[in-house]
Each structure stands twice: as structure tokens, then as C-alpha cells.
Length: 537
Image 1 (cartoon, rainbow, N blue to C red):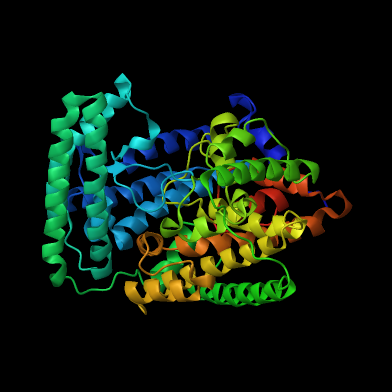
Image 2: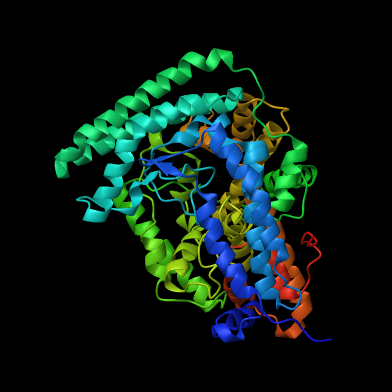
């Protein structure tokens, strides 16, 4: 039996000259470029049109795009190109799900956020994001000419955008409305920070910034006034959740499967935490860094130790951009009263969070080593990448713990299981919300109570942010551990398939060579097995 090509070999095929591409693949690439234009709403004077009429028109035209995709003959294509076809189908399914079920422009006040201040550690910002939002993290002050024009256009459009939002937001999802109020108040604060920066560097833009801030404040007040009218559920329901998992995120599970996995992971993590605590009971406690200077020293050492571990243990092929990718993302020191869950972990043993921050390897790789496929060279829409992006970052924590990274830090292993327990608890909460079994308050209370050591405060911003995201983006809260489980299964399968030819470095190099795409498709490319993929129509 002929062994299927590994991912890196498939990638070389994609890099071949255009003449070597299979018949019809160029049609797929053309369709992809045109699709990305169609997917965005139309703009009028800088304002995206999410009106009921515009959205109905877009949804009505979607079937024709899906028919064009289906008409492309891919029967003779190699696996890599067929995967690209499935990725485009998933994006089209994502838009369909938005129109039929999610309807963020109608149900989610937070959808109308004007500013995005911070860069996500994932390929695109998590959850639904309005077209034309000002991604302020992309620039530094003073702004260059291009950034200045982008900010000016976005601020000028803000009052009209938020006026349109009042017309578009006809949904009755109470919890989504509640978190939308928090988001709107956060936008007011963000615009005030932008106002201060503009006053120092670009005072001519201050009037636009203040008009946008006033519009955001008025919008928040309007949301508050209408909250008593909102009484409906916010979850999408189990049937729609299952459809999204299989057809958009290409995860071979159901809501029920994920719930059982999360419950098992919560129990497993808490049991192993108890065992580790017993094992380490005679050791002094692992204290957080006491000063900013101590934190800087420990964090810097952790980056060097983590990279050396990956290299010396031959975990993956190293690149010169990996060190700056991690060092640039080390969080600052936080005093005790400001510490959220992840700061509690990081300040005690920064090696644990360095594992999760392989996220930034993905970001750097997209810029430094772009995938040969134009479709995989850019981030997928609708968070289709979540099982791979969040799954790998989460899997690396326990994988590297098992591989020996924390052997010199016994209490560090405890932190690994605390992290798994927190991911499982918050995912169960999100799943129960989407089944409309729990309210947002019940979900927050459960996530906080089930997170060990009381590090996830029920009144803290983090638990609210997480549960808002998981309510707004079905499948995201579970993707950390679902993706982890899929990657672990792939590691086991590939190890058995290759036998004595298997190495950890080969596994990770193949995984990375496939790009940030669903794990089910990576498995197809790496092993030749496609039973987790939905059949083509």
C-alpha cells in the first residue's frame, strides 16, 4: 500500500508553477478571491450596511456562490487542493450560519464595536467582528498617513454606524443584550483613551473622536433603556450547534460529544491535580514573582528555557523568528489586586504559558513563511481555525509537561492541570448556555466555582469576557480541549502509522506545514484518512 504524502510534500506540490496545477484549481482560486469580496457587506460613506434588506439580499445570493463551488470538478485533484475546496465550502457555510442562526447584526449589540485595541493571539479576532472596525493595535503613535486616514474614516462613520445599529438590533436575546451593554461601555472607555492619544499626536482628529465617543455613550444608554424588553434565550440550540460544528468548523463531534469530553477533562484534571498536590506536599509552595524586576528575570529565562527545550529535545524545527515572537508577547507584571486567572499561573511558573503562546508562532509563520496555497495563506473566516489554533496551544501545555519541560518545577505540573480544569469548566458553561439550559449568570458561577484555587473570580472581567465570547461564537469555548483531543489522537495515529520512522519533530513539522486549518483536514493531509470529513455533495 502506498503511504500518503506528508503535509510538507503536499505543500511542495502547491508551490509548483501554475501550469502544474490540476485542471480547475485556478477556478477555485478565482472563486475564492471573488468570494472574499462578496462576503463583506456593502459600504455607504464608510458605513457597512447590515440592514435587514441588505442581509436578505446577501443571503439570497449565497446559493449561487455555493453552486459555483460545487460545479468545480475536483475529482482528480491531489489531497492538498481538495482540502482547499473544503475550506472554501466551510466559509460559505459560515456565512449561511450567520444568516440563518447567529445573525450578529440583529442579536448582538457588541457586534457594533468601533475599536479593536488589542491584537488577538489567534489568526483573526475571536467571535463576530463588524466589517470596517478600527484595528488600533496595528499602528503606533504618531500614526502614519495610511493609518491616519483609516482612523479618520472609521471615526467619522461611527455615529451613523451606531444609528443604524439601533435599527438593525431587533433581536430578543437577553444575555447577548446584557453583555452588549458591557461591551458598549468598554467602547466608550476605549474611545476616551484614543481621544487622549489623538490630542497629543493628531489634535485635528479630536472632534471626530469625541463625536464617536458621544455616539457610543448614547448607544450604551439606549441599550440600557431597552434591556427590560429583552426576555428571549441567547443560545443557538443543540441542533444548530451541531450543524455549525460539522459544517463550519469541521469538527467531527456533536454538542453531546463535547459535553461528555469536557466533563471527563474536568474530572481528570482535578484528579491529577490532587495527585500532584499530594506528591509535592512536602515541597515549599510555588510563589508568584514578588516584584516587576523578578518577573522580568523569570519571564526572560522561561522564554530561553522553552526554546532550548524545543530544540534540544527535537520537538520541532526551529526558526530565528521564534524567540522574538515569544519575547514580544510576555505580559507585564500585575500586582495582587489586579491578577486574573492567567496571571496567577504565569507569575508562578512562566514556562506553562510559554507553551500556550505557540499561538505567536502561527502569527509569525503567516508573515515569515506563508503557505503556498493562497487559500491557506490568509486567516480563515468565522473562526474556522479554532480547533487547530486553540487546540494546539492548549495541547502543548500537557504535551510538553509529559515530555519533561516541568521536571525541575514539580508544582508547575499542578498548574498544567489547573489550566485544563479551567478550560473544561468554562467550556461546560458555554455548552450549557447554547443548549439554553443555563443563563449567563449560571454559566459564570459554574466556571468560577469549578476553577481550582479560586483564581477565576466571578466578578472579574476575564470570566465575563470568556463567557461572552463563547455565547457569541458557538464552539469556541470547547475548541481548546476538543482541538487538544483531536491533536492528541492524530499524534497517536501518526505514531502508529509511521512506526520506527516516527519522530516528534516530523509530527510537528507536518502539522505546521498544513497551515492553521481544522484538525480534521490536517489529519486527512497527514495520514490519508478522511473519515472525519463530511462527504462532498
